[in-house]
Image (cartoon, rainbow, N blue to C red):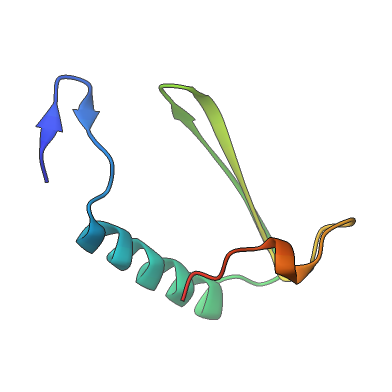
Length: 67
């Protein structure tokens, strides 16, 4: 992985594949009903909402599969 003065850059293909694999494993074995996470980024705070239920007004077709 290459880095610059601002820290690590975007994920490469191998890192993204590992991220997907670990996320799927987390969701299969750790997620109970929901999880709310946030992190600061150079572009502002990013929020992540993981749940076993579809949020109101959405359909499963609106979501991109990760595996």
